[in-house]
Length: 296
Image (cartoon, rainbow, N blue to C red; front, side, top):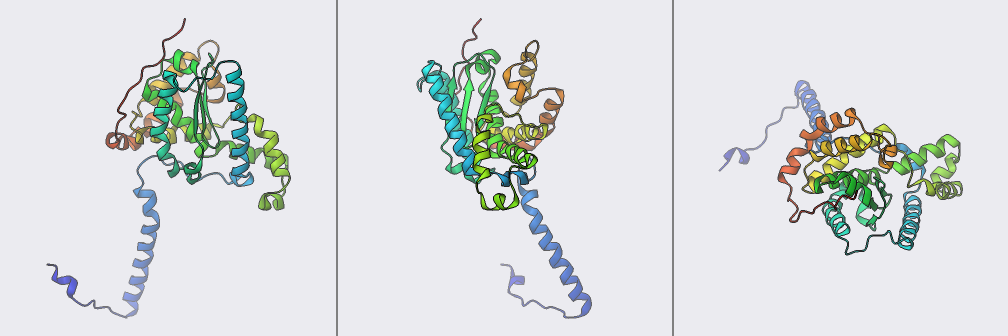
């Protein structure tokens, strides 16, 4: 028994101890405020950009959903939309179902998104996740790079991270601010020109190029998502080595919006210690899938 707990507290009201108690209170308050940042395990990428506030999340997600639906319709008409029974569709959806549960930690809206994962028959080495959780992989990235499940998870985590961190919304906000498309009143009230500008920019969502900072952020957040989902984060290194090999000659479409290079790999390697513990403790996938046969 801890008898000290039953003893009354004795306090002194002198000026010296009053100042000391005040200083200790401030220190404790500061420590409590700092604790969440210290206590969180994983990568640190800072807060979201203020430019995201210039564009309505609902509007950009609606625009993305419309464009994604059009893409699926066109692919279906060309018999290029992978059916639900396709082995690689099953594979992609199984991996996504392990990653998605960890997405709401990065964006509370993600728990309400209507996530979709589809496969498009195309030789392009490409994949993306549009705002609102609309994911697509092209057969080219799976076939030509012969991606393992861990590497697929890294690609998917990276693309999902762009959506969670709202990089498209940020980029559009910057464009609109630069072009003077919105005034302060419209930004506050969400009126008129915002809706028109988002609609006008909706067609850019598939080809939108992100900056180096966005790419680095997506690499790190994606690596954490994959690690929490039970996929080896070291696959980020092998993935980008494969991308570097694929970029020799005619660079793949993926690299036009996702620049590769030694710096990127070094950044991933430097941050691996932040997620290795998460991966070690994570439940591992009960099933592993093979990449599709590589076509000549």
